[in-house]
Image (cartoon, rainbow over all chains, first blue to last red):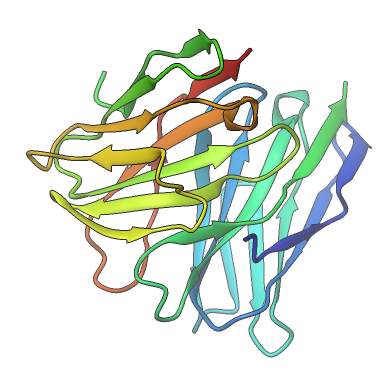
Length: 112
Length: 116
């Protein structure tokens, strides 16, 4: 079963614009992670935010976590054509015996 | 290359045949995961190992599926009597022990299975 639900399912923006992707989940979590996947390739870890953190930055990435609303957002600033990929949120659930549960993903297209 | 390695990258087989995938994790990682991903979906958890012990299996893992990690290093995922519904990308990932929480997963490039 998939826990996270990303929103929107697809996003198309112009190079240089910011991209905001949202994720909602259902259960208590230890942490929430975002991954990126280029077509036909494996997933690459982008950022991890723990349940006691509210915001985290890494380069052009900013992630927020609101555990009261069971939601997270990923912001990519000053997007580039190379950011075109699928993005997934994944939750490490409390007591879930150390596995990540992924959402269905968001397809981001950045037009040059 | 010190990343996660998966073989074969592509496998085409006829329904009813058996297939085996191999995963070589990052050497110092003691946790190894298998996920399955179909087109347009996120990865779905199949099973995971801590060292050689298989600690959890998903209900998705029917009795036709078996995974092993005999020496706590590489792992194999075997599918017996393949069905067309088994067609998917099989992803392997590894990670360092993070206690009860799951830390960053390092994924391989996947093994794509097509069952005709």
